[in-house]
Image (cartoon, rainbow, N blue to C red; front, side, top):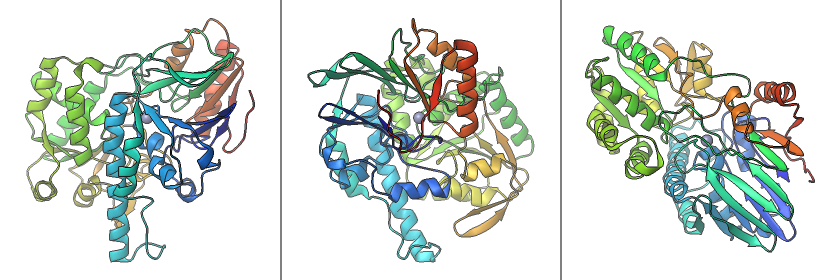
Length: 449
Ligand SMILES: [Zn+2]
């Protein structure tokens, strides 16, 4: 087993597993954030791509699926196993990723701010079109046989719609890959499945060093919204398109329904967010909201995909709430809103989730007074707020709860998908509370089980 991403970082998730003649990959995510990481996207894959037999995808977030088109470009021709919902969402996310990269390369070439000459996208829409036909849909809890003694099942991970934990059986050994784990107290998603037995466990560690505060996200949001509108300001929420946008729309619709905030015009300005929201509305049996909740959500928010409507909204002076991608301000339409609002002390930029190192979102959260984008510098004068409580990941206590299902300690526990402090804390916590020796997975190292 070799970690080819998501090792001592939260992005680029990719684990290469060999067993007998099988060569499989769990996830093939994009590196994001710090430049040293992003450059890894342009490196050749650290395994022979032509020998790869299967890919198993845990969920549709870009940091788990974002390098799939590159894998196909590099010669992979096997199957990509995933849930139906992940297939729907990954198609949306990969198309959007290709489009953003094409647009950014274009813009950099036009305005001449790229150091590469000419700037080239990692992949384009054509590469994504070659990837989607290789999706092979798998139901939760059904067994997929890869070879005589290698098989796997996907189980609900509760992280975002369609997200899965991978249970891989290789001969006598059972390996459980947590993927990204959802929370036990989510108001929207069902909790992650617990396991009684695993010989090897690969465990995500995003929030290994903290516990989510006990405050309710909807109460925090109420406060930020009311404070902003008392100043006649605009509220700009950089939002992840999948899960987070729907969660925020749900909370805003509840606050309006309960008359806790004024009926402020609210928009989701994100082609990908709109597609993901429509997917969310159509798979109501896979989340906890009922039809009345969904109807309120639909009434409460105007969905915008069209570029010209987006431009009109961008230039309107009326106070409003706008949700737009990307969630960590690494690109997307939200940057145009930032350009207009970041210099106004009456406006609020509300960071609504984890901000990885090296992203503009992390800079804002850390109180940086100047932000660079579109080849220029902007002074930060708007109010910067963070909704730390909104998270689609388990925290440290939730991780212990997830592991509490185990009847016996696994022989190997590998921690991945975390930044160094989170990994170290979780390693200590597992040793203290469960007498479990966990290893922090290293990029490019091969582990033999
Ligand atoms: Zn995720």
